[in-house]
Image (cartoon, rainbow, N blue to C red; front, side):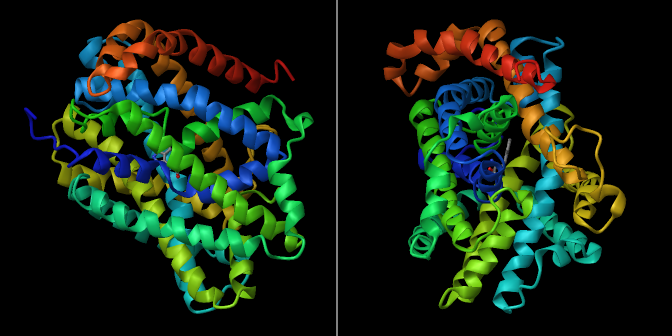
Length: 448
Ligand code: TRP
């Protein structure tokens, strides 16, 4: 490599780091409650369809742009179309990273807190826990601090090694929990809710929720894969890497659902409880399970690590932008960006009962976002901005950079891609932007 930006140590190192970014609270916390809110199995099918038809081919585009330019999202766009308005698309990505991290860090803080709550057997009521302003702000601060410390040292070292050891353990733990949850009395009904589709449940809002969740879960739409792709060598096969990332990510989300829904129906709980869902169901499961508190402590520990590899990636995008484009020192700017993110995250942290104002914050219609500040942030950055960013980026790659140029980059390391590239170019130029555009239009309720 001709510069000192650093590089992943191997293909598997890159796949683990990117899968580490993708796999996180999005799979285990967000996926189940979004499925629950949107009626179950039909949504799951729609989700899988979007992962395959939109998420994966779109991921190729971000990775190609990143590896070809070896830059952050803004720099990558600038290197192709200098000083045009397009660089604002990269800018939107950088902002979105901060926006997502501002609420994601709050949830990650709860997860971290649950390690100790479970270990001490002091599970209590979730509502009491999240409405305690002191506790939530402290946990959010601790989590942001750990994230900052790791990004401070540069991405390529710590994250790769950690994810390689801990992610497989999380996988095994989930398998065990699936088996346990499905032996509970009454769990069959939950499995049916999760796996037997009722297509009348699909509406315009469901479509955006499924698409937004696909982008969110695979870390797409804000240039994260541009940034991580910029550290990949030309010899690596980007196509097979993207497949592995998408496969692991989807697998973990589906597995989380296979625990939550059977458990939830067995306990007679409501699947559409929203963001509190997994924080209510998992502790209950651990309380009644033999040896559950030990298993539960491990579970929340591994979930915190999964969240950490995601918060690292979220912080890395704005940091890489500042370091590359504004020529500031990484070791200084990480703290500035992290502190800024923490401050704008405070309203989200207080929006689950601690502050009446933020808890009842509602400027978006209820069909789009839950009526609290965190819900608004999650919709704005986690659904809308990712879909909008992906819409613009697919146009940029397909039309401005050119599908042919992008395809050539993808062929390096995966010669097989040449055979399917016509289809891919069609998808990135027409299919992907048009589908996203229609789903975005539907936000205004046009086709409902
Ligand atoms: N994908 C992560 C999750 O599922 C969250 C995340 C990390 C993310 N980096 C991202 C989402 C970049 C969008 C873009 O938990």
